Length: 194
Image (cartoon, rainbow, N blue to C red; front, side):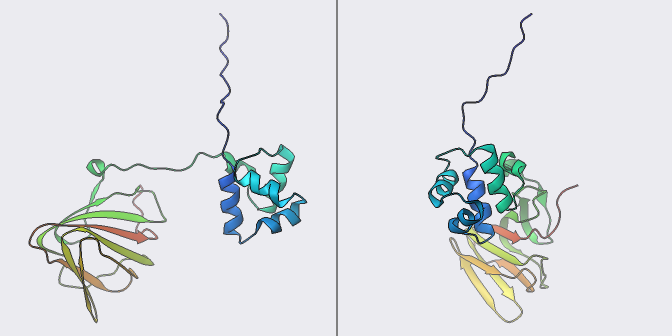
């Protein structure tokens, strides 16, 4: 029986964006990398745009200058699709609200929650906090009033509000019908894994 060998992929590896992102994250310019490697700025620019493929030796040299393990260039990107119908229901203590975690449970950098507020729904009479540096609420439809210790903020469809999650707050649906919200917590306020 003849052996079947896998066909090599004709698709080029796109490593340039990873190199560029790493360089930017370290505050380095193309000129800095060129000086450290002895390569030309034009060549580095073409590599970052995936217009040319560097040799293995050149690639290792670029990675060393960027303190980037070579293997990271070939890792598959992490992606997670969460369909609203499959998103797990969570309970953050509100009354008259259905909340769904629409970001990946295991994502530590951010959590996204989709909330459907029935008429009169609220976060409760007491102010609460979330253990996140930043909290963003975006109103998809309806209207909500956020209450803080010293002020209230009214939001309607299309409005967003950014504040520290540790700032005591609560909310109330002030629309006659349902209100749909998206909450973004960064970093994630709790670990949904496990």
